[in-house]
Length: 106
Image 1 (spheres, helix red, strand yellow):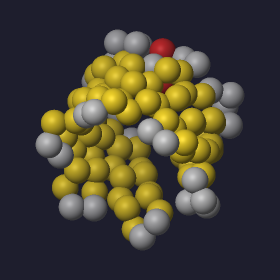
Image 2 (image 1 turned 30 degrees about the horizontal axis):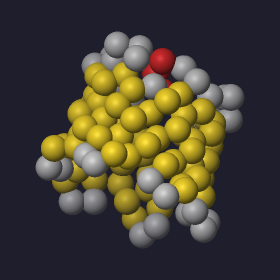
Image 3 (image 1 turned 90 degrees about the vertical axis):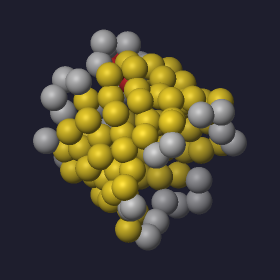
Image 4 (image 1 turned 180 degrees about the vertical axis):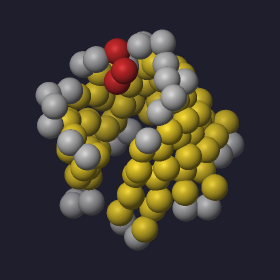
């Protein structure tokens, strides 16, 4: 994190997130982008590809996602670890260490 900008590096794809109020702007090195708007417990994503467009809804420590590429996702936080499961078989684990978040996917 640097000021209001977060830098990402997911293998071959890197990117940034810039926050302005309740809106986040994500830009990735592969040319894709998405905007997140938070309204209550629901986040709305408007992206350049169907996989980056959709919404997530938080219920307690679990977030459920529905994406325009027909993928659904579940994100569950336990302590400092978040487990991300996608209906297309992709699974990721995020660990927060200080101001850094490390994500591994398989």
